[in-house]
Length: 572
Image (cartoon, rainbow, N blue to C red; front, side, top):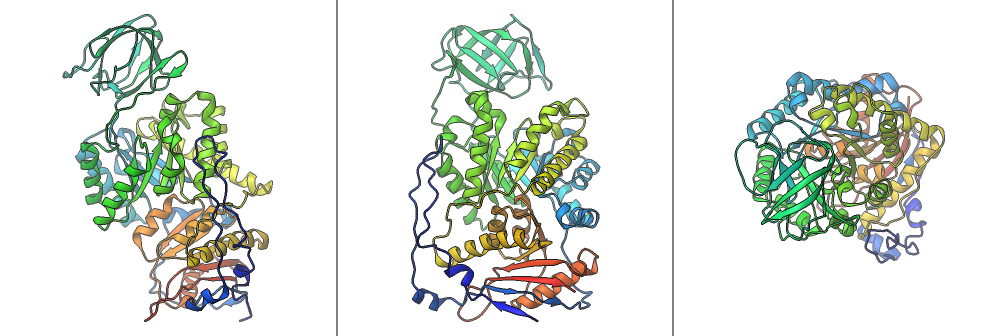
């Protein structure tokens, strides 16, 4: 084995002490961050047995039939058909609803590339959600899929209204409607129930009531106590559980209510999610970081590794964007609700800003809402929708999400295939045009081991692209280095080998990462030999393939040491 020792040369020569942190003060909705400069001297390395080694060596094949490779069947098929560089890196989230809740329909979505199944707790019964979760877990266990489960909380929706019918209702131009806080069973003609008693506080005659960001618009013509009589001035459809906003003189009427981010129902749904072993909880209508921290602390007391995502869907959340991103495990850009609260023309730039901030702070980000809205009713998307999807991929979002397209649409499977094709094509174009993303400037690490891990991954991303390796293998317990690698958006796919099931399911949302569940030992060379042998035995590695290998697996000994390595191996 020929080897070249770097002995931290890749790291200690890097000007960490002189590097300045990213300045986020220029961001429209960000809060300025003071640059962090971290200095250290050579004596600090005495307490760390840290290894950064680059090795170029052949791998000798060994027969280890007893080992099982936890690679999901969809990735395995894609790898055989397209090779390493042909693998899709953008992850796909599908909302499960009446149109796709059967075992067979869920199987089709899993085969089509669904990485995460989302359950919206606003809709359907507890028994229904339980049944869907168990079907997904059955697919994973029996058929070899790797689909994570996300529940999306309802939140304290102060501006939700329902006309009582299970279907959409058309509001005609000039028709008079009554928006009331009175609660009643069933439905009444031209009557909409508001979910919050104070929904009309501060509203004046002449204000505009906008439904679902513009699906229909009404003018307030009379206020009667807590109720409003309105005239439809922009006809459209009123969907069940529609969201309302009020506008005056072209500006959103901001209303501040002392309601908790998580309602009593949300906490009940969270307990349900914990009992069912979900992988992600998406929090609706997050106003600040405190609510996110509160939920994460609660989950830690339950010893649960469920990841908490914050949905950015209000003006309040934009004002405190950076602190929310910092506190959360990931972000969902809920463009539909967000578009209700900010001018439509700002959506593209705000979306790009959120994606960039999430990447700088190393948090996965999902672009959601109305990606392929027309496919709820039609089998083909508009060209503008495909362009919208491609732009999100070009901005290096971690994941794209289908909402009504899969939940209630007639062509959910086709919509998913459009996301697959559009994202794969844009990723290929970016590689062909050498459109490499800039390396994140923000320094994440505070402790020395974290700084070392970050610099190893930054170097590895550049090495992988410059050397043109076929794949990156990372051996990780909690997924930290896999996430840091993903942050650099390298060209080769990242295979994250882990012995933690929760890590495997969490990495399903990370750009370019294929999580593989496998038993790992303290012997790094044995781990490398075992995994490469298994992949080679399946015909997915061939002679001459180059693999960049990284590890953050901690060796078990009396005095734990940091064991991080960087190697390049050529298959023989």
